[in-house]
Image 1: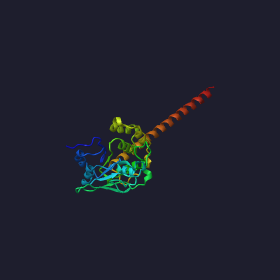
Image 2: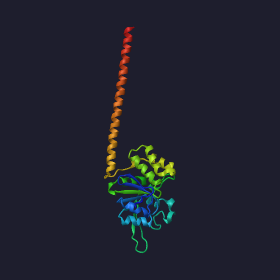
Image 3: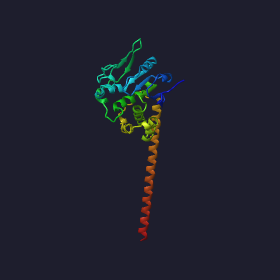
Amino acid sequence: MLTPPEQFGIVEPGLYRSDTLHPSHFPFIRSLNLKTAILLTPELPSRAMSNFFEENQIRLIDLALGSWKNNPNNSNSGGNNADGSGTGQGGAGGDTSTSGGGGVNTFTLTTPSIPAAPFQTSWWKPLSEELIKEGLEMILDVNNYPIMVMDTSGIHEIGTFMGCLRRLQHWNLSSIIVEYRAYAGNKARYVNEQFIELFDIDWITLPANLPTWWIEQEAMWHEEEEEREMQLQQEREAEANRRQEDLNQLTITSVTAFLAS
């Protein structure tokens, strides 16, 4: 029996979201034939999860671990120092290797090679803008597909992250908030919704190799924009014609009244 994670969802074809994986979820996740998995929270994956990714040749990228390691405010969390010298992780921006006894295979956890300053966040932000930027550019690169994005709860960081993706897809804010709250339920946070609204989507650089769903949606959106602009132009022309007709009628009325006098 295939058991998906509680917060699992299909975002777009080949793009998935999820909370933390447990062994009971592995058969279901294996059926997705993933190529890449992205973690948004700054915790090392469990031994079972890391072994699962290694055995199935799934590239595991922990964006938030790079953020966490480079943030001096988090230097004592989980026994990991800000310089990356803590237990179970390499230097900042490098690969993280963990191995157990008894011949357990070593897995490699990829973390971004980014300077410390850009990843530091304000107290109210669920994620840094730099992390969102790098993550979005990864999930918009078809070379990483199929791909799944995860965080611990499957709600807060990932909900904010996907909300920014929806902004990039030209969704209106109301629809984005509805989707966010559908996953978050009574755990929704206003600051996450505010972050989504204020995020600058112009900061994102689209990869050269975009997924098919993005290309099709963009083409559809541009067609709708052209139709909308054409309709607005027709309405403006109709309004101009109406005003001209009113002016002509007023002129005729004025001339007639003058001649009659």
